[in-house]
Image (cartoon, rainbow, N blue to C red; front, side, top):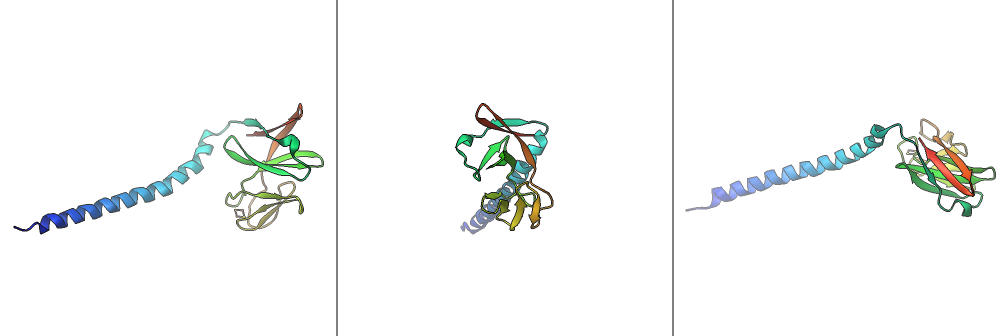
Length: 146
Ligand code: FES
């Protein structure tokens, strides 16, 4: 009596299970980021205001990236006060950083450059960095994202 047919069936079952597992992992790897991308848009219409921690200690030229309502925001202090913009590049969403020396926002992903007002200077972004409201009250700084 041979056990070979049962063993082949076991290998086939294992391969079927492995393919199903791989498909599930691949589907989750592709589907979860897509849902995470769409989720904030589905929430819509809410505005959120937060205090910028340590704003009083920011020198002219300093910047800070924070999350407001689940959105990345970059706050810059210049001679006139504080400004805030979306920190997500309008090309593919990489986080921009502030160059105090050049007075520009730089995107490391595809070398985009935005001026100090968030307007596109060069690179592939199709739109400026969206500005956000900044209010100073009682020595504190608040950013509001809509
Ligand atoms: Fe910023 Fe492409 S993501 S230039």
